[in-house]
Length: 418
Image (cartoon, rainbow, N blue to C red; front, side):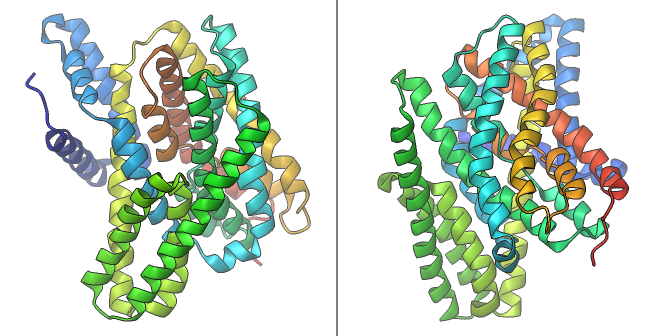
């Protein structure tokens, strides 16, 4: 197979996304994330089966070579994440975030840290059971990358089921901020795992405060500058370009400042998606900008779900890796329950536990962010274990939890908005 350029690799991914998206819309009508994940996984199975039938073709080798041409560290950590978080933040209501600021703040900070620790402990036990014995530092890395949640499909279900508005705001707001916080925690823990240097709790807290606090400040600055620029003109082409400049320029600026680009983009997107849309844009500009970023979000998420499906070919599957993934699914659901239920209990008068706990546990779908972080890890046996486990967890999350969530919500008491 001839060597592929970055453009060739991107072209192949986009063509596959478009083709599978068309087939899904034309024949299957599944949720896009479910369809692309399933189709990618089925493509992996077909490739492996074809190699078993006709080993001389080496289709698996070609897929591995293609995936090897994708620089995930650069493409995902330095590119896709900024676009995904900005696009997601545009659609979160600042008014609802303010209303649910207590549970949102607690879930996206204390909840993420608690989830990371609980999952790390569970993952350590899982790795011992399957005979792989992952170091605790790498268990914490896995806990951090799998803790962020993706609520896109769930929010649509909650709106249709008419659950209380505060619960909707909590699900959306927590997901937005736990993505940014999760990436910060992941970056700190990955640096500790790869440097083999001891990381004290005080040092970790200081790094977290600097990266997260600096990210919030940078996001406010670039978001405000963009808001003022958009307010001074009325040209949808230029205003869409300004939003692109915020994401690409702001994320690039975060690196030399050693602050969190993902947090900055979440804050900037929240500012532009609320104050910018309401006060700085005409109806035409608002329509163009929101549709543009919705398309970007769909394309990038589709590419990530497809890549995680194809990654099944690249992994050197063994019974131990497969068993680790299967055992991790209930362990992660239990860790999610234990890390959210005590926090939700503090707001039980406004967020009824019989409704909010099941939704925030079973509705905690893992998606693009977890995939991006797993694929960005440096090569080695720990990457194989973590990517394989993430692969199984995301497949289960998207296909099983995503497809059964609507039925669960309908059966829960209190799923009708007052």
